[in-house]
Image (cartoon, rainbow over the protein chains, first blue to last red):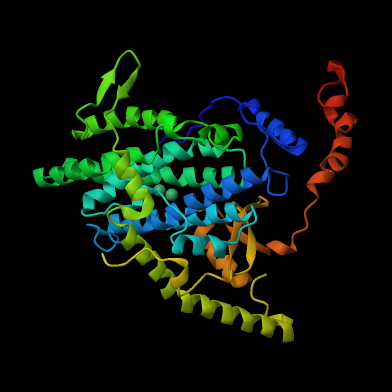
Length: 336
Length: 108
Ligand SMILES: [Fe+2]
Ligand SMILES: [Fe+2]
């Protein structure tokens, strides 16, 4: 739905203090909008920042399968089951694209997975809320994937080549996610009064956590300047949040749903919607592990990984056997 | 919920070993080249093909898949980029547009 390029102009090379001649050269390349590839020289801080951001992003895709996964068997029709299954499978693929991009920076997949499972690594706060009703599956697609698209489209132009390429692939798949969610909510809104009430109740719970997905206000985001100078971040948190609100309010009006913000109103002077105060205490609580479902999500994630150990062992044993067979008789080669 | 977020000390199965890494190439339609699309870990090449099919061709993106162990690829050195590729910049006579063909001659 939103997968068009957003042009915000070249980044400013002077916005960051550089320390070495290589760093100077690096910032000049960024200012010329050149892509940085894995083997190119890059400042250590750029590499570390990217590993953290890309892996957090990958973890979010993977943990994001959990709140929806539980609804696959309970979806109300075969069609909805197939669609939800396809959507959740996409999210697993997104995790893979992003882990692969992070690995080009010299970190192993195993280290990244261990960091998630040990609680050392963070993931998006939104997946620590519960999916109590079928309407929540619609709301997640429409609002949560919608917000993710807002965040991700500018990342398709990020300075690090493997990350930008992964984001292009992801954005192509995301727009189906948002549309299928909107379709679920729209169907509920056209149904019985109980179904419409279910949709409204769901929006009431998810609206504010969705706005928190864009992160702290610009004034409270100390790293935005550096990420912008490095061509990693193209649009600020508040600007992305504003764009999301501006496109979503008319969609809610179309559906006949209200958004749970008494201060939400059109500001003709700004040409944007004004919104009320975001509860940042809640945001910090959820990010730091104390949301409604943090423990459950981590428990389920680690359990899935542990339960799959025998499959990974079997695959490794099979591969070792096949390699031994190939060594004695090259004719049995399986993949040409 | 009684489950606690795990910590490094109680990870039953640390993901200590990664399967080998493969680069994936997809032919999007008959008659076109295989093109690099990404990479994945798999226990062996046959497994990599299966995983690549699941990840990279869910929307009919391909009709054929190649997988190559990532460590089998040799890349040119980035620091030799200038000496490798800059000399071609001055050899514009290698392009047909370098030559003027009089209009009377017509298409050539
Ligand atoms: Fe995704
Ligand atoms: Fe998605």
